[in-house]
Image 1 (cartoon, rainbow, N blue to C red):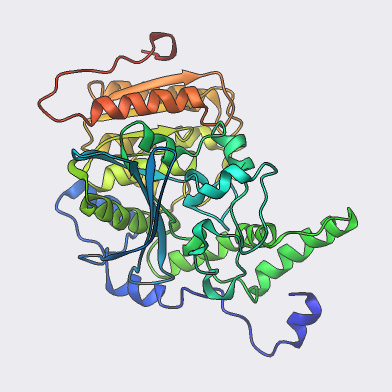
Image 2 (image 1 turned 90 degrees about the vertical axis):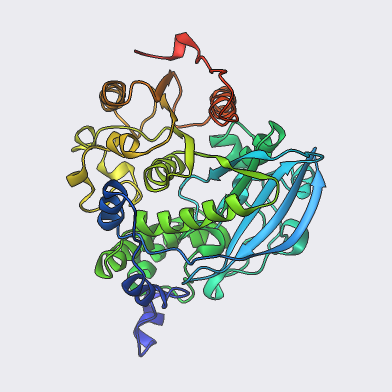
Length: 420
């Protein structure tokens, strides 16, 4: 929407398209908790209550690469329906440990969990692109709120951030039953930004002008991501206005997905964990603090002290990390301390440009002091990435932590990467 378009429009477009029912739901459905710790966190983040007895629909199913991938969908109490992918080893007969794979922020909201899943189409794509409308299996509906269909997610996000691995599919091949879902603001749960809210339009118009000067046109997905990046501030404003937060509403979606995972066939509901990189790591930590169902989780490239973010690192992070009032409950690592998880692994990347090293090391010492029997920290000379070696360590950690309770086997992290 150009400035001329805005001037000719008699009314302002909705800033909450596809989510007009969010304010009423958040006001009427507040999450209640059995413990003081969870209640404090739920109240601080404003976590909406999850729809009870959530039902899901299986839209399609395929078998390839030694796994079965099911495309699921469920409807939460507000906003568009959620798409998710359930991936488990083909031929598995015994119940498997269940893992919720939480996608990162990545500055890419046109797609969500698809970045973690391998589809049959992937093997045919070598340039990271796909025609618009080319969906996995052809069964994914179009965008929310009138947004254009985006096509398959670019494979370069996997190459750049995940060592080229589709994390959820790879974890399933390691023996886990894995659920990867779109969370609030991403993929199927994205906002409808057509037409753009006026403030968002102003930001996008500037980016488009710069790109056009360089002779480049934004693709549908790039256009949406540019708009969604500017729109996140508006979403944060709306969340605060209705008594929730971006992180609290994301936690709502993640709690709902955890409930679905626990109910899926072939999943041992007593052996549930989660993991995530970057913003997904923050989601894992909040989910671990919110739900006693989580026995173990892994946080990758998302641990620091709040003090270390001041003053230079504030603009390196999204509203997933910056939640109003959260500091009253303690530091960021205090979320891990609040959880009842039996084992927690935090992976630090010492060359990460988003976190100062001292903030990571201070958080590590805080966790060592307050949860020495449950916490493991490992340090990597890497930038902001989830390398294959880091994924190997995370999978081994979860495999040990989510063994049946009668097992006494323990996972010993690499001493060269574990600080004490």
